[in-house]
Amino acid sequence: MTGPILSGVAQIGLMALVGAVFVHRRWFPEEALGALARLVIDLTLPALILARFLQSFSVEALRTHALIPLFPFLLAGIALIAFLPWWLWEDVRRFSREVLALTLFQNAGYLPLTLAVALFPPERAEAFQVAVFFFIFTASPFLWSVGVMLLSGKREFPLTPPFVAVVLGVAMNLLGIRLPDWLGLPLEAFGEATIPLGMFLVGGYLAGMAGGIAREEVPALLAVAFSKALIIPLLTLGLLRVLAFPSPARELLWMEALMPSAVNTVVIAARYGGNVQLTARGVFLTHLLSLVVIPVFLPWRL
Image (cartoon, rainbow, N blue to C red):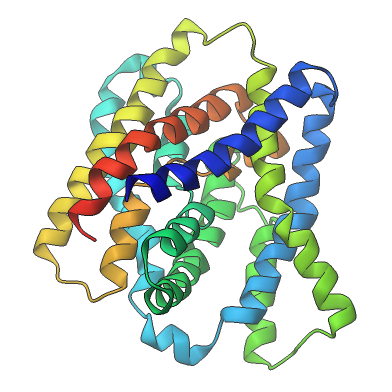
């Protein structure tokens, strides 16, 4: 099991490494990373969300997986419990918005889908992939509303392009609207660029931080690391011992609890004026820790 897990995380790390090398070597200007973040948020990510919803969403499938759209909020509650003790530490509290966002939101799609293909037989992997979609069904608008408010520090509810894409995708599906191939295929092509561009951004921002980690950021990064790598998995494990979720919901909840912080938190911070440096370091750190966390914890409940 360790080999496929490491392979899935390594794929993401390689994409970040490309971004780091290009920015470090000045083959890609660091000042253009903000424009790239805008491209991802305003074009490629909405295209990905819309294409996925038009392909996978249906009322019948939603009834079958009725519990799963609640899981992002269940994990958010667990993350809040994990965060509460850190609130007492003043050095963490000064970065509370970033710590909370990095703790609340996980790499909900790409890594679980990669692991499912590697770990499960084809029929089980296909069922798990549908379950992942319905997790993203609520996780995505949650990130692109609450996540944007947290990382930007703004209290107004943001009407972001990815949030609009979720609403539009559901509405079009319910109304039976289908895009012609000349429009649907370019939409999918733009959407497929989202993950590599997002990881390129993470690597690019990390490369621009050659001065190292600021001392005042260390407590915040420790809080994120311990919460994501230890506290949230243990709390979720205890919950799964009490509640008997059916398969594949059980496996999905467990896998999502082990996921590193969402790459899109860096994209959000870059696009909406958040703390890009701390957010990028937190995403990188949790992905690095996942090389140990996922192989150690994942077999416990699969």
